[in-house]
Length: 353
Image (cartoon, rainbow, N blue to C red):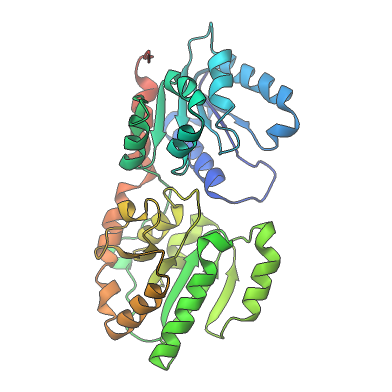
């Protein structure tokens, strides 16, 4: 009998990267460290729609073999997995946990209120921010726990901080490469700032894996880049701190619909790098404006260039934020955040009405 069975998108055998996969693997690694790998088994849901019967049987096997089930469905699976595990759990009385990735669940349940009864029957639902918990509570769902998003990062020590004192100041983006992440907006803003200042005050390095549907568009966009803007390819998040520490700030002008608690913010903070982001969805609940970064109105993209122009005149603006970034990163450390989940794994099964 395993202590925990994790049902989620692990993308085993595939070189895929996104927030869903990254969080699923992070949960596994954190629990494996705390409980031991022999206490955990997994079910990779990649391609589940192609063979739903095999998925059903795999879920049944997970229920039989595990004391606790952790499900981490993406938006395409949240209508299925809670109900399937509730059905299979009759007679087994396992504890069912739902770890939500992103900030979309309350909105989807508002649109699909027939799914709320199944969600209510789960033992615990874990969300990444307090406002997400409040949104579910307003729908009458009380079995919600706040567990900060986390990554296992190599957070810098304060004496490792790198300060930027000379132009050009290095900026970067560090996320999936797609239109909605604001990659083009970042390039436009850096170009505008340099043109306004009449010099190359900033460079921009773009890191990440291009989504297939955006690949051709991005290739065309790259052709128009100024020499101080470069695409640097994909870098594994496990190596992010040593890479990102050399940057003055990380740009995150996202307007992605399903954005929740973006892991790129944790990566930046762990490297002591402030984040300049749109005030989009939950960004302002993560980034403390003027303390460890800045947020601006997503309806006014021109503000990003204005922030950069001001920063060029006063480079201490973001340099002074670097120690606060490290302090903020500690709040989202994997070993700290997973204690919330471990506590629930040790508690008695509850009944929700």
